[in-house]
Length: 103
Image (cartoon, rainbow, N blue to C red; front, top):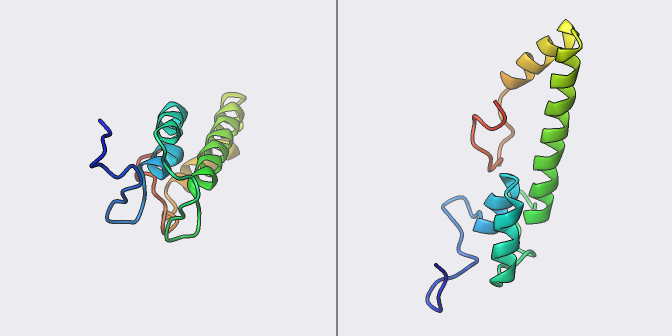
């Protein structure tokens, strides 16, 4: 998979590395693999975030979603309505997550 001719820190058209994408997607096992193969954790995306910043963003989104689902399960209709309304909000520019993430 990774050899002497492959750049582990190669970026895509949006200047996002594999490590950043794995972090933003919550793929910790892929992050560990890439770091063990020498991927740099100090590179930053155009928005100024590095892979670890992106991983905390992903974790925070997950915590918010769990809280909303818990509130909805308890019968809080307003929490459910807020959750649905937030899903319909425009995405934050520069996000590396797919549009359907956490839906």
